[in-house]
Amino acid sequence: MRARSFAVRVPSLAGVLGAAVLLTSGCGGSEADVASDAAAATASRSFSCTQTTSSRGTYRQAVSGTLDASNVPHGVTVTRVQTGVVEITSANPASAPSYDGGYWKQTYGIDAWYLGTVTVGFPSKSYYFMLPAAPGASFTALLKTDFGTNGQYGNWQHWMACTAQ
Image (cartoon, rainbow, N blue to C red; front, side):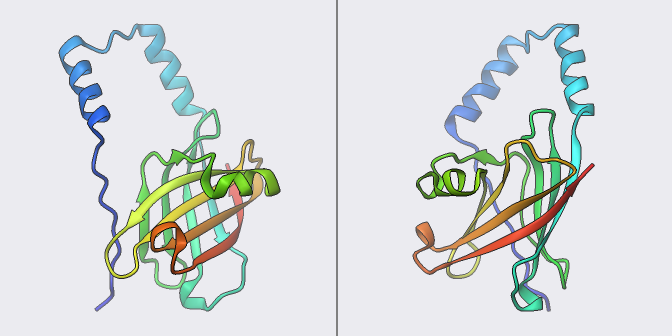
């Protein structure tokens, strides 16, 4: 039997209240807003990344998702290459500019995006996907997995070769 990982996202109070306000007051959008949103959605492009950092074959990871017109990642999925097991998915990763004290941005010029934390098993695993602010058709990214709170049990730093189209 294959072990499966999954993430549970609990909405914040602000998110719940924001949804309630929209439901009670209406969206307030115009046809122009809808057209603008549709144009942004069509401007998105998919990306896929494969780990280039050496490791055991069973630990090799891949990342896929889409980038919107502002190069913000969405629908990000991390899988194990050998088995196809999904480690985590994140519909809308959160920007994390101060992650690791801004080290990755300052040193490598890559922006950090928090994908979430998986708490099944021990220790917990927090996933951060880092990519350039303006990724081209091919780019280098980093998937960092922290084991335990703030990586107290170590981490993986997996560099990735990526393509976007």
